[in-house]
Length: 631
Ligand code: COA
Ligand code: AMP
Image (cartoon, rainbow, N blue to C red):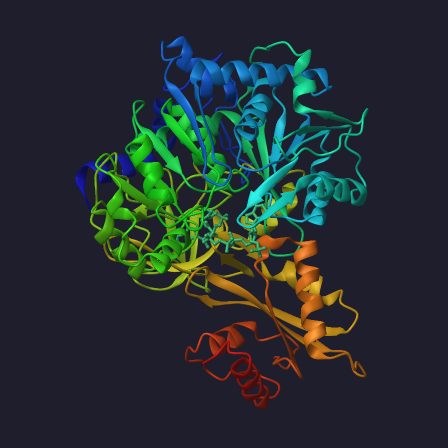
């Protein structure tokens, strides 16, 4: 182990309270915490419980107080619309304070929930920060989710206000948000009090007063408001993510720990200083977007890029290089799938050679396993370190990484590097004993988790405890499996639950199965993630029909695909449904999804000892071949 990193890491594990107390001095507190970690009620740990601070103050006001108000905070670049805008810290603060005033005028108070369902436009960031300013809890919902997903989030969060825009733009199609929102409001049993809608010019939507108001009108009589004092353990946001069932989990983030941890990561993990330009090419609807488009770079006081476009097709495979070159970006953070898309379109890097990337220093990848081929291709092209790091919505920042601001470590292709300071990562075997180096098992993290991770689930303490903290006493169960090698490098191999990763988007196959089961001709079904060269994994559905159904299979498949698009959203990228005769099961009736996935991916598999009827596997293999899933 490298000494400098090793010392810092060991100190964070042996003396977490001293470590994080020192780190916490770097943020602004109205009242500094004297109690660093409350361990009295495991697994509900509390960081900095008597501290008083504010998320928005740390993201904006602090930098102005420190004389950096004229520095660029946010660069918005939208190749899909051709729009560009830039905001200094001072300008962003004015916009945020004013929208915070508008939210107050609409009745939003400390602790109220505000749903933000918006495309990648500056107003989305302004709305998030405005919530923080007045102590409201935002819940951003990704634009690729359908109305029923939005409705379930309205119901669970009991949001008072919903902030949206007239539309978003996807290559080749305009996503009209208003009808989706109206449908969601109709479906939800909880009734929101007000809808604030940002009109995108040329694509305005109808506004029905008095329950609906346009962004501009809401601002028209709003006054700028100051940051309210918030307790460190009050909540900054809820972000819903796929769970092991179809019901999404409301991951919550407390205020103090979030600011402390995220600010620390910018220098220590990403080697970013206040004068640097940073870009995270994700979406604000995902955790990567929350943490690394909005919060961490603004806490740090550097410049962050908000990109409304795609790695390819907006307009070409040079879009990323253009942004890096135009704004002198120092580091980029994205998902491997984005690089696979560029590689597919421009394998020789012809677009790359048109741009000046002399200021570019490193590429960080996360969200799914970075395959060695893609990493090597990117290294070869960019001639900078390409760093795979591992994290989850639950943690909000990297669990394992090359901490480039502390000490650059060597790359091992296929590994997400070492545990980051604050995380005591271990491998647990099924017999509840810790694994030796290189032995596979469940990846767990010893409690307490560091600041910035989820202190509980929204209104679901029991689910938090049962789901994550119970199987391995004293540890957080990550639901990822893998091993740690003799040098301490972590290798993430697979999920242990029903989560799949499609283009870096986290999806629950259980949730898709729930939708398919609602089809009137479907008796039973299984959804699995099969390997895909571009998106990492793709969901496919296998359905068994009720006896007597005579409808043709192609129609049933089409209907199933449409149902998933309508109920979950286009983001599920669900395009393959195969009608089969029977599903392979164990004698106790459990569907052998793991075995089917192995067959679909052309991997070796063992005949499960408990299989009810081995002949079904041969049938499935033939069906997959007929449908070109298996070549
Ligand atoms: N609003 C509405 N619809 C959206 C959307 C949004 N914000 N984002 C995606 N969608 C839609 C897409 O238009 C597509 O719809 P379609 O079936 O009509 O074509 C569908 O959801 C699937 O989207 P996606 O998985 O993104 O596939 P894609 O083919 O459009 O693009 C990539 C593939 C690789 C270019 C794209 O996934 C990408 O840029 N990934 C970058 C990594 C990333 O952002 N990861 C997120 C977590 S870090
Ligand atoms: P999300 O909560 O959407 O960020 O998804 C988290 C999940 O994505 C993790 O539990 C992993 O399964 C997967 N993941 C994220 N980063 C990596 C990585 N670097 N390598 C392998 N899997 C990853």
